[in-house]
Amino acid sequence: MNRGKKSRWMFMGWAASLIAVLVTSISGPASASAEALPDPRPLGAKVFQGWGFDTCHAPTLAALRAWNVSRYRAVGVYYAGRGRACPSQPNLSVSWMRGVKSMGWHVLPIFVGSQSPCVRNKNKRHVAIGSTPWAQGRKEGKDAVARAKALAMKKRSALYLDMEAYDQGKASCAATTLSFIRGWNREVRSHGFFPGFYSSAESGVRHLEKSRKAGVRDLPSVMWFARWNGKAALAGEPVLAKTAWHPHRRIHQYVGNVKEKHGGRTLQIDRNKVDAPVAIIS
Image 1 (cartoon, rainbow, N blue to C red):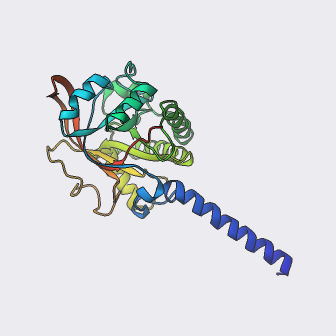
Image 2 (tube, one colour):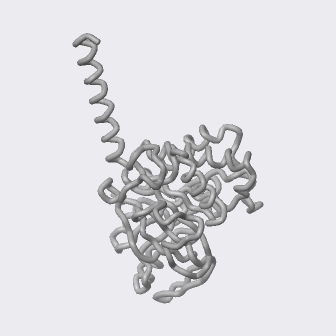
Image 3 (cartoon, rainbow, N blue to C red):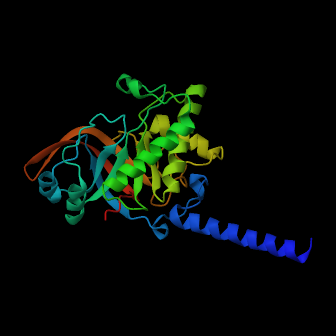
């Protein structure tokens, strides 16, 4: 190799290394397995550790103000996606997001997009993933980012894809679902956001853990697992390896569909223990 060609190759190698560093600084290794991901805080994430709840409709600011007497300080919000059970969100706006922030609350943004073709909930079958799951995942990931930005969420925020329980034992359906999830993750990550994933521990979470062990790329940065066992534990989940989605990359939804009253306001909620990135609100 002559000197001119060698210099060009050296420059190209240096440039490629620089690009890789820049991508990693945004959201961690762009397509690495979850086990290889580091602490998200040095990468720009805002991590909340404590108690959270999610509810179908975003509560009013007055209700959250009343709930300041509770132990909760994080609220899950179904902010976008064609599969939402509560598509109408009259309280959700930029002013609501900023009001939540001013009261010391943290937002866990949930995107309920297309669902697995073998979803168990018959009410979700009308929004099944189509014949081009990767492209559809990328398209819906782009929408998730755009809708987040419209609600004053900044880069380095976490956005959580809600994939309701499905039969991950059916190979063809599982492959379609995984392709959609990976496409969604790839798109969200490419815009500088942390892609999170919510599902039943025995369904989507078990599926993605198997995929992680198999070395599959473009997996979520954060795992939100639903196991309604009444035990608010982030460690010890049977389907997750101890080192998977760790550190500061887990949420456990440990109780569902219960009513709680604080400050004179009653809400029907799911309870969560949180140690994970949240929305960064401008």
